[in-house]
Length: 131
Image (cartoon, rainbow, N blue to C red):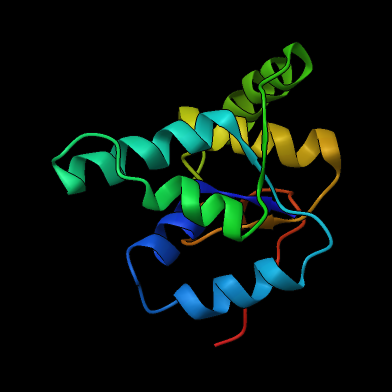
């Protein structure tokens, strides 16, 4: 499974979907996140903490056994293609980070766990999280 920043943030911030996302992650055979998504989550968590680097993110990544995946050249090309197909001129309106997540999901062939509606408007295989 590929994990978007939105799903991990929902867990870290205790949002209503947190338990469902945690259950989906722990049930998955593999859990991967782009280093770009890690940075996106880290900046948000550190801004909320207001005290610099908050260890909760790295502790959670270790606890959930999420593998951080570096961005490759192949993913860079896939992200560019994603933006051309699903960027701001498309109803999905994928942004920079979204396109890198999309690229990781497409290059690995793994389903995506996310919060929101944006990725549902793409051709990705998605993880179903029941209410």
